[in-house]
Image 1 (cartoon, rainbow, N blue to C red):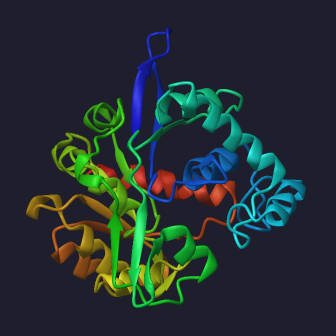
Image 2 (cartoon, rainbow, N blue to C red; image 1 turned 135 degrees about the vertical axis):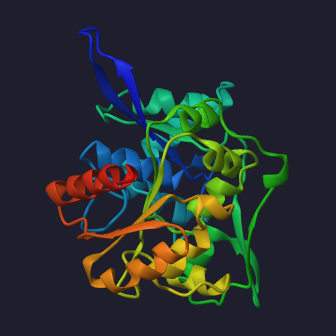
Length: 304
């Protein structure tokens, strides 16, 4: 969400609020782990380990080795020592009575992020995966099994009784532009939209809603979102994901959709479904190319 605030000089400055999926969260070894919140924080802080794709730069894993020796936690889910500092801080704040959103504000205050991170809910709504071998936490299916077990269904525990964290609905309602990031459409964006009130807020906002395709040339950009899409009967294709989200004019959530240049041939079909579409380079190779994608999203947000 891009919001505008007075800058004290007669103009305004842009402010970005990132509403973040919490369905991957879990309790592990007595600590509250929030993978998406932490990954975004480390990335914006310039401290994300790009080689491993998770955790912080310069990590050591001595504590995880000790936990394995004691038989505590998941031996296949390694947490770095620096990363554990974040989890300990979060768990301490939560046990002191703070909400997840309040704890997140305290944790992110040490970094110069330039973005407000807001968990979609303060409630514990963890994603579980139903498979032929039983139901397991999403992290076990994703990290341990690498999504190799066919998913029968994704279930957000306790979602019906959950509510958006304070500020979530307000950010959507008052935004100048709402951007649906190229995250996993099923277990990331889908979980966010599944929190009662969030989908309705996106559908009702006066701001244009623009999405960025997580699929390029029929392949996922990162991760194993194709396994998730297959489980819900959606093809791994940029146009199929756009139609899955749907046009706001027909009860969906999108006004516009960005696809990569290699998928330019899909633009007409997406627009026939009532969604403005544009083909631009979507590979986030570095900061300039990523900034260009954001600029393209803002440009396509304004109908011509």
